[in-house]
Length: 173
Image (cartoon, rainbow, N blue to C red; front, top):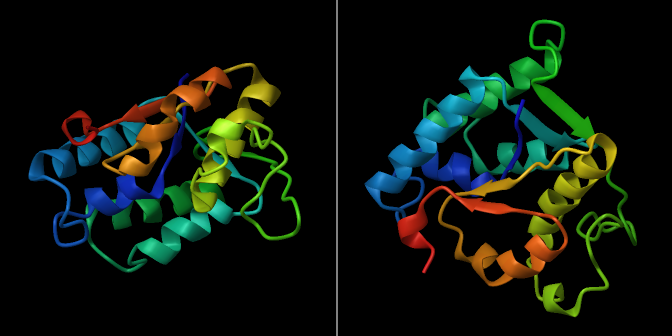
């Protein structure tokens, strides 16, 4: 069973061009297809146990909305609350917040100078990927849509065992 960490931009882009006007229609379709595959197969969705990621999803989506990303979030929440119906579909791992600010984490490679300018709000995704890998011995790549902020750090993250997969390859240059 494959495990993935899903950056918020994948859900936002999956909601369509009105939600993500910078994204191509092809990127929207690719995100929708990937999210559909994740729900429909044996992929594990990795989240943190303090609901930081799920809360970020909620803050960027319409919880009563009908967009594809909105519906994915709604289904994800349903699966979190019904674990016996969806065994091992959603896995929550513990990450340790540093300095109590919620954006710095013990599991993030904080001592790597090449990651010092990494976006603070995305550190939780890296920390979750690394925590899952430490606990399970399995990798959990991070899926992103067309968030170019990840691109400058792909090599540095890979050096720490974190793979970043760009769903919308045409937008990564």
